[in-house]
Length: 316
Image (cartoon, rainbow, N blue to C red; front, side, top):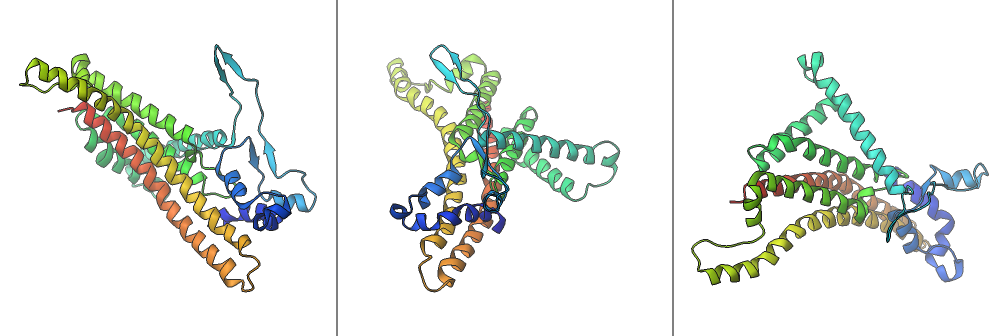
């Protein structure tokens, strides 16, 4: 846990006076330093970059990522240059592929004759639980075809969350663009699965609500009132998925960095116990909670996606 805090302590050390008195120091304030570590950027921090620069081995504490010329598509400009969060998204995807392929080899074929051990056993337990108790239980009949997506969603978000807890790491799921894209993919899958299961007429009934047994003018009134509500409900589901994941992952890092920042803000205090020990203890406690939150948010995203698929497939 302390290792996750070390890059911030290392980077903040030459800026301690500026954080406490920004008007005199002229450097980064504490708030600016926190935002630098939480937001996306076009550079990757070098491990122990501050120490290496102080002894003269390197000139910069970060590696500048390549930049490409923007692509113009009519009025839309696309910048495909990689950023820190993009790099960690690809890293999370690679880790998911490697871990899952390795686990599959440990649990299938000749290896299936005996129970897997260690990490393979843990991953298999997660897969079985997510398949039986999350995907199939919430989606219902025909949910087998959605199990791969739910599993991929869970492990990808989990690895992206955990990478942000490592030293010099970055939490890609702390970027609203990333969580919104994941939520949009889930929305497309939810609506397409509902359309294929219910058919055009049945799917239309999930948008235009017309109760049976009412006169024509009552049906027209209910359709006029409830249709915007139903459409808003469809948009609210992915919005809630995106904002919940983004807010939880960002808030945890803000709290950790703010607590560590108390060390420098309270530096003039004579006693070192209060300004040093207390913030570190609280930050470590928050980091332990962040491990649980990383797992919980991946589970909630996968579970709610399964619930929404099941709700639209069984609209009655």
